[in-house]
Structure formats: C-alpha cells, structure tokens
Length: 223
Image (cartoon, rainbow, N blue to C red; front, side, top):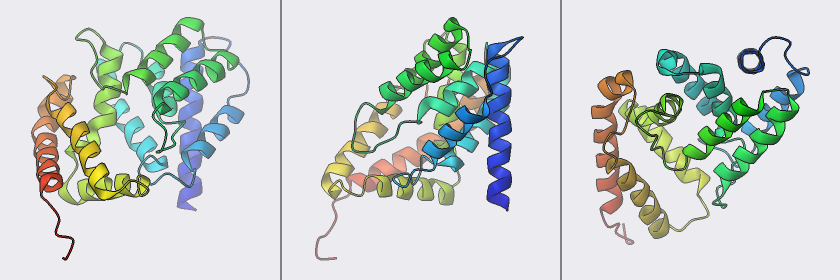
C-alpha cells in the first residue's frame, strides 16, 4: 500500500508541476503523461535511477526552490532527466531531452519553457551550470545531492550504480567510474546553490575521494 501511496503522491507532484508550467488554462489531462513517465522510471534495468531517485531529487528541488527562477520548470526537468535510461547507451540525456520536447509541447507547455526543460536535461551530462544559471544550479545540486549521503546510503548508491552496469567488466567499470568522479572533483564548485555548497560539499568530496581511492586499489584475483 505504501508503494501505491507513493505513486499517487508522485502523480500529484507531476500534475502540479505541469499545471504550474502551463499557466492559466492549462493543457490536456496530465494523467497519461504522468503514467508514461512513471512506467519509464520503473523499468527493470534500473537499480539506482528508480522512483526512489526521482523522489529524492524532487525533494531536493523543493528544498532549494528559493534559488530557482522557475521551480516548476526545474521539477519537470527532474521528471525527464533520466526518463530514457539504458545503461549501455551513451545518449540517454539527449534522448530524454527530445522526449521532453515532444511530450511537453503536446501537453500544452509554452515553447520557451519546453526549451528550458530540455536545456536543463542536457545540462545533466556535465553538471556544470553557468554562474547565472539559477535553474541549472538547482537541478544539478539536487541531482548530485546523493554524493553527500551518509556512508551507508552512499555505499548503497554505488552498489546500485554498479548493478546497472553489471555487463561492464570490473577493470573497465573502475576506469569509467573513476573518470566521472575525477571530473566532478575537478569542478571549481561541486554544488552551486548557497545551501548545497554549505551543507553538502565537504561530505560529498570525502565520499567521492574515498570511493576513488577504493577504485584505484588493485584487486587480488586470487582473493
């Protein structure tokens, strides 16, 4: 029953974000769009990029909403940012952005806001928003907040990511994951909102540095 309640809450959150973006008069019934997105977020290949991740990022956007220019547009970007997720493919963000462009146009969202949602989705490739990109900063901070999780939650996150990439050999996964961590650690600022920078930076950098050290430690095949 809790799962059903969570789905109902997510449906409500999507409807509110869509109505907020559409403005007075709204568009078509939002229910079919919510159902199609929820189905995507429950696909069997997902282990980290699930409804739990979606909910967590939406919660973080709510907490950071004061820093956004258009919180409802950011919330819609959250819904679409991993809507297309196939771990073996490299263009998931682009395909997710194009899905957002098609679906939100059909749903009656004004063209400028559709373009902004798609831009935000594409931004999650680098998580490196411009200094004046308030919406981008909120989305990226919300998406990366898992990096500042408690040790047990961070371990569960890394294990789920590894499970999504179960088809990648260990050495290749270590190299690829390490490159992503180094890219994030090399950013001048990992979190861009005042809240994220103050509350999450130190823990996230510790977690990532610890993971990177572990990935860099040779494994003993005989162990």
